[in-house]
Length: 376
Ligand SMILES: *Cc1c(COP(=O)(O)O)cnc(C)c1O
Image (cartoon, rainbow, N blue to C red; front, side):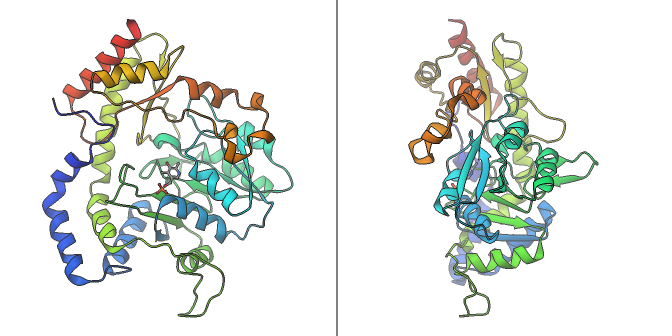
C-alpha cells in the first residue's frame, strides 16, 4: 500500500508533471517572473471558472483577507463578526488592522458560523461579517446576506477551504463559493483544494469600484504609475505559481470529485457506527471536502491520533482550541458559556486523510483502523 498522508501532493504532481515542467521552464526562460502573461491568463481563467467579474491575485490567503478589509474603508474600533471555529488568519487580520474582532459560535452540524449568534452580536459598531466556508462547505449565505442587508454590513467570504463549492440561494440562483458577499478571498497554499507550489492567494468581487481599490491596494496603493492614492501593501502572485495554477485549475473539478468520492466512502462506513457523526451536507451547498471531519462522542482525540500514527495513518485535530480562549484574541472579553458548540467541537473532532489521490486500499485500511480504536 502506498504511504498514507494527510495530503499527497507528490502523487498529484506526478500526474501533471510533464505539463508543469515544460510550463515552468518556459516561464524561467521568459524572465517575466512577476505580473507576466501567466498571471493575467490565470486571472481571466479563474474569473470564468468562478463566474465572477474580478479576480485580483495576491501573495497568500491571509493577505487576501487583510486587503479585502482594507478596501472596505473600515475605521479602528469598527466591529467585525467572525467564527470562533476557524483558522487563526481570519481573526488575525481583523486585529492587525486595529478593527475589533467579535467571535461568535458556530452550528454543530456544519461547523459554520451560527446565524443566531451573529444576530445577537450585532451592535451599532458592527461593520462587517466574515463567514468562513469551513472544511469545504458554504456557510448559510442567504441568512448572512439577509442580516447584512438589514443592518447595512459588508460581507467578506473566507473561501480558503471551499474554492469550487457551489451555493444555491433560496431563489434558485447558483453561485460559486465566495462570490455572493461584497468580497471573497481564497488561498492557494499547497494543501488547499487548488494549491500552488508555494504561497499564493486571491481576492474576488463583482463590484467594479471595489475591484479598482483592491487592485490598487495590492500594488502599494498606486493608481496611475507612481501616483499613490492610498496606503497599500506589496502582495503579488508570481508567474511560476500562476502557471502551475492554470494547469491545476483545469483539474479542479476532477480533484473535487476525487475528494467527494473518498468522503462518500468514509461516510458510508462511519454512519454505521454508533457515536460517530459524519459530515452533514446541506441542500444549499455542495461540499468540496477540504477536510473530512468526524465528530466522535467521548473520544480522547490525542490517544486516537497516537493509535493511528502507530499504524502509519496521520490524523489531525482541526481545531483543538477555540479562538475565543486564545491569548492573542482577547480571551478575557468573552463569556465561555456563549460558545457551547465550539467548545464541544474542539474536543470531539478528528480529521482523516483527505486528498485527491486516496485509493480504495488506503480507505479500507484507514476506516478499519479507526474502527479498531473505537471498539477496543
Ligand atoms: C489557509 C487559510 C487561510 C490563510 O491562507 P494562507 O494562504 O495560508 O495565508 C485563511 N483562512 C482559512 C479558513 C484558511 O484555511
